[in-house]
Length: 141
Image (cartoon, rainbow, N blue to C red; front, side, top):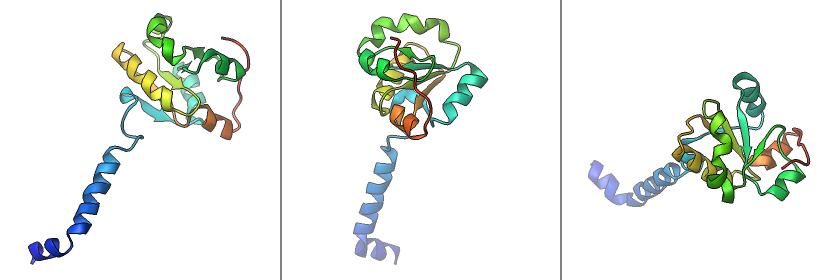
């Protein structure tokens, strides 16, 4: 009886397999070197409670146009060469931010390989930060 149902409705089981595969590949659950994702509203709390450090991996020009207060700018293309700047923060949570969250996942994976263990990614990046009307600082670099 069950085999007959499966044989007659094989397409339902095929769709189920595709859905399970897509869920396993969901960007929220993969990438980022095992980093947790946090919302823009969670970021200030993590900074205040645990002295979290924000690392902005945008290019320097974009960083100067607007970044989260006290963020350290390490452009993704230079992060391996400049990672020593973060060594004094290894014991603290590190929040990686970029424009939309894509480069943050790559940067978090690099930081994980360099033994940073408390990694977070700003979900939605600075785009989400701006949508929440949270402040940006201009200049610096």
